[in-house]
Length: 104
View 1: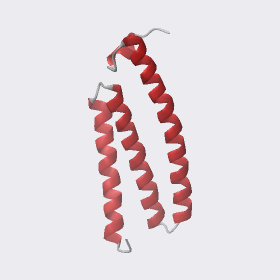
View 2: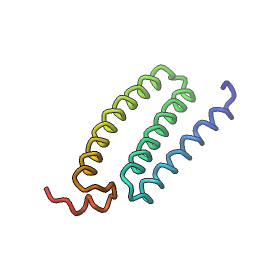
View 3: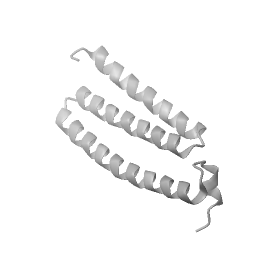
């Protein structure tokens, strides 16, 4: 991974995964698929942070930020899965259009 072209490939891969995750969020009505796409976005951000740290020779800082992103991602995912599970138990569906019909 010493050559700049390998690092550039990681940056390109991060952008492609981010675009795929963003498309999945926009195109999907299934809440589980949307959560998976949010995870793809988070993984793309983590990969981009590591790649940026490699480019700027601040690998330790990039690793610290990546671990922080992963910890926050796990907490957000756990809450989101709990909300989707509660919605499924209440409505017997995981369609995102049902969320609009809920009243607080």
